[in-house]
Structure formats: structure tokens, C-alpha cells
Amino acid sequence: MMSSNQIRSLILATVALGFAAAPAGAQANCDWYAKAALKQQQENEQRKCGFSGPNWSSDLKAHMTWCAANPDQWKSEAQRREQQLSTCKK
Image (cartoon, rainbow, N blue to C red; front, side, top):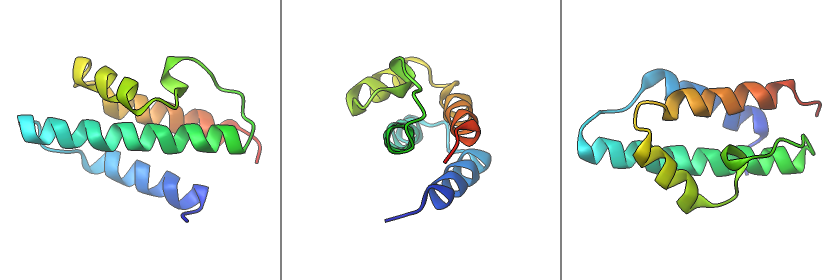
């Protein structure tokens, strides 16, 4: 299992690199985004950070749907959650 620092590094590196904007790339982006969102939510729960709301959902399908409707915002949303997690005491 990856540590929270390893997950954070992977998320930041992946977001920094970006993904292709083609339809197949968009699906890959949303797959990655939804899985990253779930990992971030798990960390939120494990560390008892208390972040809540739809962007902190444990529902993979909800994150996929949001990403598909907001194709230009997934990177910034993943980064925003990661920044919030970095402020939470371990």
C-alpha cells in the first residue's frame, strides 16, 4: 500500500504532466481523476480531516460524472483537494 506522501507525489506529478485532450484521453483523464479523488477521500477519512461535500465523496461514479461534465477542471480540483489534505494534521 502506498503511503499518503507517495500518493500525494504521484497525484501532483500526474497533474503536472497532464493528459491528452482527445476523447480517449478524456476518458483516461476521468478514470485517473475519479480514482485519485477516492484515494484522497480515503486519506481524508483515515486522517480524520473532516473535509466534506460532493468533491469529498466516496462515490466513484459521481466523480466520473463530474469530470465528464467539467473536462477542463479535473486537474485543478485534484490539486485543490491535495492542498486541503496538506493542511490537515497527520
